[in-house]
Image (cartoon, rainbow, N blue to C red):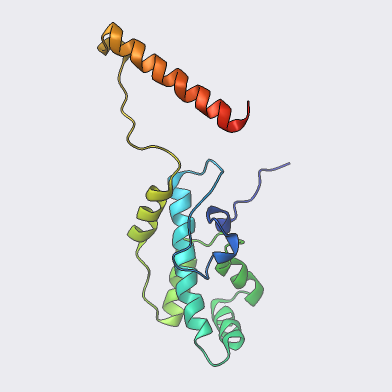
Length: 157
């Protein structure tokens, strides 16, 4: 059996916000690489831009059907990507924006949001034990043991 397929919407606290709520909250449990999360969040931002445009049309469904026809895909497949149920490539997203003559969201916005939401502490500094005094080493070990005990308590172990 193969690995599970990545669904971009899973990076959001509320999966249904994907492509609908521009400032949706990033919150994920899986150990995704930051680049994967930033790419998925960028897809979300592009989808929000596209959906906002389509929803502003007199007949949003007809506008979606027309866009899908021009892109050479089915409306259902396009909707899956706009809802984060399938990953979209950068070139696909560029095509959506170009077809609709829309500005591209900032990739930096996606990167910043990802780094801010990352569950990993980026302020870590590696210090080798031989560079510490015996007192500093003992303190560091005690802090690490306390952290492990807290994590175990949080996990109910």
